[in-house]
Amino acid sequence: MDASFLRMRRLRQTSALRSLVRETHLEPSQLVYPLFLCPGEGVRREIGSMPGVFNLSLEEAEKEAEEAARLGLGGLLLFGLPESKDEEGSGAWAEDGIVQRGLRALKANSALRELVMIADVCLCEYTSHGHCGVLHSVDGEQHVHNDRSLLPLARTAVSLAKAGADVVAPSDMMDGRVAAIRRALDAAGREHTPILSYAAKFASAFYGPFREAADSAPQFGDRRAYQMDGANLREAMREIEGDLQEGADMILMKPAMPYADVIRAARDRFDVPLGAYQVSGEYAMLQAAFARGWLEPDRAILESLVGLRRAGAGFLVTYFAKRAAMLLR
Ligand code: PBG
Image (cartoon, rainbow, N blue to C red; front, side, top):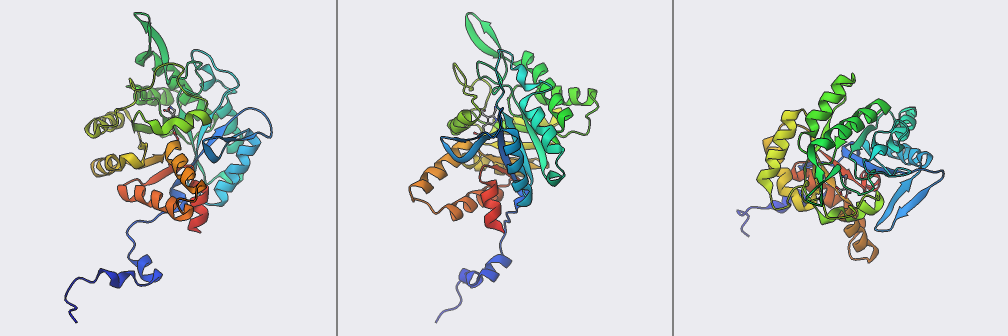
């Protein structure tokens, strides 16, 4: 028998051997769990296109957070559904805004100390038109005004930091918002609050279910004039470079699975902490396959997440965070 060929199977024989030579590890502390806070009491409303994900009133959210902490998750990413919306999105920076109130409650709970509380900074959940910035009209057509959106975004970030956010995460994709937010945080005495910039955020069909969850679908047009074209990797590198120059401390890539090459390129190029967001549509399509018995949930969930870690993401934002953490125990 010829034993001179390469025997790759030698190290695959037992679970102990496989574990010893495993290159990529997934830990609960690398997972960030998104929560959608809504007004009311005792509200736990499941999102149609996202089974297992809910709009939660504050005391329900606190229960979820406690479970997240027990499971050893790294943090929470907070979104809010305000009581009412307006043209400017003023609910985003309201002192008693939904996420501000949520943050105060969560930060007061000592069982949650190990969770990093990340607050999404955007206007789309708070504007009546559902766009991520302030509108202006040019020749009778409505557009999102870049520079006029910076002040409300910066105000929102400061307000969230004051309410207790450990990290603020702008997801609007306006140019210059990281610098505007950094300046505003510093001026407010929040020079220690880190910015996690959704630096490379692509205009994506995979955000569809989120817009149901956050009630943030644009009422006209789409987001292609501010979010990136999915075909562009080099442009993503420039976005990241710009955000880092403006003062971003960490970057977030999204969506994740269709952009694993962009995650890899960013990892190789930039020496900052980098996360990937497995977005609502990625979650929804896996759930749809699970519901039909077409994929084996436990294995598919972990494989999808390990794949993103291998692509270079240090931490992962995922709606599967709790379930994955249970599987990793
Ligand atoms: C807000 C925001 C969106 C997501 C995160 N922050 C929606 C969008 O840009 O339309 C998407 C997250 C997901 O799909 O899970 N701008």
